[in-house]
Length: 236
Image (cartoon, rainbow, N blue to C red; front, top):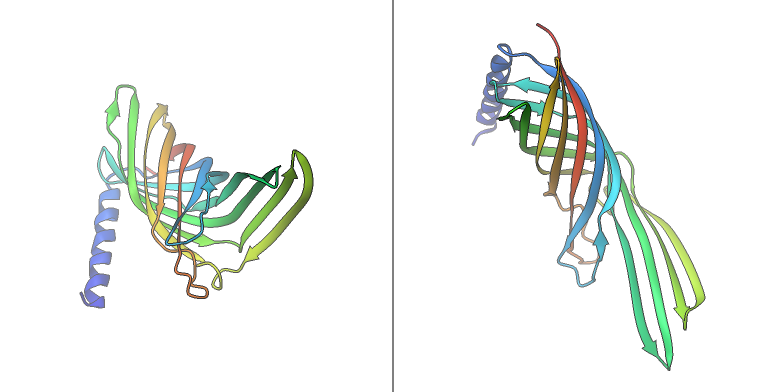
């Protein structure tokens, strides 16, 4: 498809959305919550025992109704992502019990922009929320890796180390990421105010790792999140 045709289709799409919005009431709001972020690693010879890491998220909401039960919601905001490692290795050698404990975190912060199509069926006094759409992310700083390890022989601590490293965006990791996010939740009306709770899953599509010395490992953002928020109608 020619670039001019793509631009025309994009313009028509947004004209359709905003022409629909003119007959309904726009709402704005805020949400905040917790991420259970993780990394998915593929194509590596090494074992990366990543586990979910908790972090905060918040966003400003702009909800543009299309019909009585559907809307488009833009959510510019901030999100703490990454992963953690917690591993214990036990070995028996030379009649000695050896244990190594490793703990660490990968820390990375993003400015995020989900753009969600939402379907909101009536559930008695509640309103359901089904959300699906693309999600864009931009790193606000370099990825940071903090780790510590302890070695024990027959239950006695014999060594302890710690590391704090930074991976520069563009050199070791990609600064820009994109993916798909989907979720489900419920909302409750308090007068004109709507209070809602929602759970989501975030599926990163871009490989965050850059190729180093022929290593073609793929690393993707993954993880769930939960949110609480409010929406208030404006105008009209």
